[in-house]
Amino acid sequence: MRFSLNEHIRSVHPPPIGEVKGWSEQRSDDTPPFIDLCQAVPDYSPPPDMIAHIREMALDPMTCRYTPDEGLLEVRESVCRRYQRRYFAKMRHEQVCLTCGASAAFWLAILTLCHAGDEVILQLPCYFDHPMALGSLGIKPVYAPFKEKEKGLPNPSVISKLITPRTRAILLVSPSNPSGSVIPPELLRELYFLAQRHRIALIIDETYSDFIEEIPHDLFTLEDWHSTLIQIMSFGKSYALTGYRAGLLAADPELIKQALKIQDTMTVCQPRITQLALQYGLDRLDSWVESNRRMMSLRHDLFVEEFTLPGNRFRLAASGSFFAWVKHPFAGKSGREVAKYLAIEAGILTLPGEVFGPGLGEYLRLAFGNIQEKTIPEAVHRFRQFA
Image (tube, rainbow, N blue to C red; front, side, top):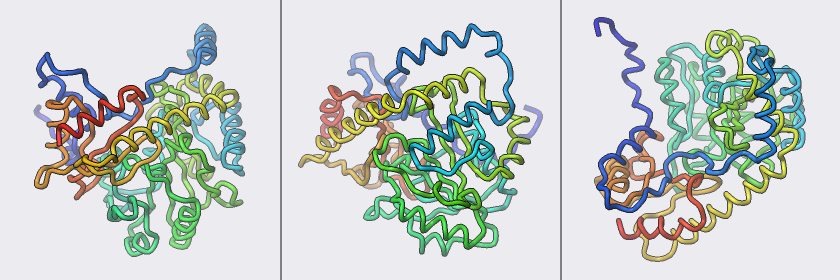
């Protein structure tokens, strides 16, 4: 190339899932099939009635057209009704913007809040896309350290000491990707008021919140929740619509008004077909979502039961929802080295800990979206034999 590239982008590591799946090409043909604990994608399909609805909507020429940048009013009203059922939320449609996945919602929030040189506090281990995006924009990620005994839960006193005049937000993921840990509602409330006192945003990515039984938190019941809270959400996992990019940004109407300037230059709007599929799920599929939550919980519990039996040198550090955060037994080896060996030698795909933040090379992330109950004993057996 005769032109230069953005140096911020050059400093960001490449997407890790593509790297991990590329290791499969280095395996011999006589090895057993892969067990995919790498990508957090549900292995089940949307229910037949939703698929039939999507097929019918696809035949309507109007489905080919743009919608308003923030999404169709009737879909955003369905969001508000779902949030009232799930969170007892005091939410209005003007506090909702539909986005192309949670990733786009995150970009909208960060670009609207931050300048290059600003700081965002992240709790380790953190979802790898977040520091990748911040680094690409020249925004400094400030990491709250991971404490294994605390399952990676944020500590308000620790986070308070990390706040500087350049801090624009505290960024949390609950349930955590990668650890699966769920931040208790009372702790989220404490962090909300910490952020409010410092006049910064509390951003919570709740992509996996439909896979926990309890109400995630009560922040949406506060009259002025939008003065401090920004929620990032994806319904791609909830309704098995990952390819449809069904994301959501919930925030103050003024932030959304400004964020739409960015949305209009990026994607314009969430695709209309996605919005129509999402509305169907929001209005009709609560019980279907709950049945999948129970199924995923069973997978998690069975895996943990097998994995923690005596004799396994891999150690469970935290788990819950879609994920397990595992410490590998190989001193001096990075998570990337161990994950690569696991892929090539044992046929198990995992993600290395260091992609989830600095100093985490002793860990691996396991995701349960693609492993069925019948495969769990074999997966754990491979871990034990490999160690």
